[in-house]
Image 1 (cartoon, helix red, strand yellow):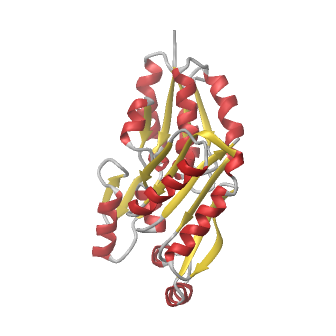
Image 2 (cartoon, rainbow, N blue to C red):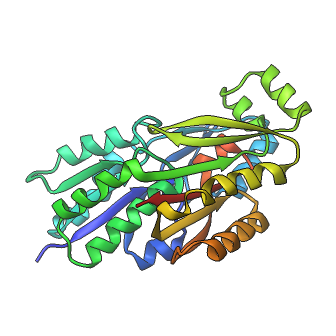
Length: 282
């Protein structure tokens, strides 16, 4: 009897142990520095990316996997007789989703379901884990689709960004905004809304103030939390991630609070010392 295999892309930011435990396959995005192309999470990691940015004083470009990349990933699974559910990066942020749709259409018999997460990072990761859990329980592709698609509107993904430098280098804020932000020690809080990254707050002053605001906003929704999974996702901010994890374990009933590091795509947009709180609402 055929089974359902769960696929995602490297922006899900799930660490290797979870990917292996839940039997999740990952298609990597590309990170491009000048003439050198890397595979996110395969031939370059976030720490190496930060070193390259410092050396070259510019951000890399990122690129979606091509339809052919997806065909190569999907093909062996379809040949084995299994079905596929792919859950990937928001279509508002990348052509990754559309390229997966194109690839799925090249296989006969409607064997592949492609779901737009409408989110990023471990927001995708939670949806993927829910799907993988259902697949391991023997649910069909149609049942998994019916479970996951309504959840995309229930994801809460918010980050504090320590510096405007990476947003400036990436063309997401002007040099004047970056300069003033640096002078005033502004810490942006970014939230995923309708599939895109939206600046929701500019916290002036110490980083601890921004971190506390991010934490307070999340804990204010503690009665709405889906208690299966949540993530504290960070770029070189482990001590703070441990503190936030401790607070959620103390004040909520979430069963699994995971700490994970951002991959290269999120890191290249937000920079080091980024920290996110990611969960689903009931």
